[in-house]
Image 1 (cartoon, one colour):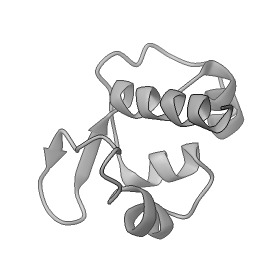
Image 2 (cartoon, one colour; image 1 turned 135 degrees about the horizontal axis):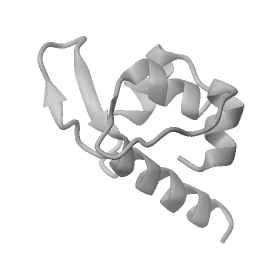
Image 3 (cartoon, helix red, strand yellow; image 1 turned 90 degrees about the vertical axis):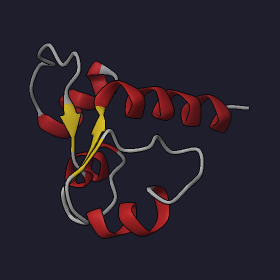
Length: 80
């Protein structure tokens, strides 16, 4: 996620996030949707990154770098 978006979502400077795992709630905040909307509409997309950790139906984590890459691709596609 770009530092601009990070500051908008979390209202702080971006710390070192190498290898950070993020949950549905965090991703939903990044794209400004409710967690349930993310789960039903975004998470199921074939082009959305696969989780790197799934402990249960509710405990699922993604690699931040994978999600950032997907967001960059979505922005690029929207500008075409």
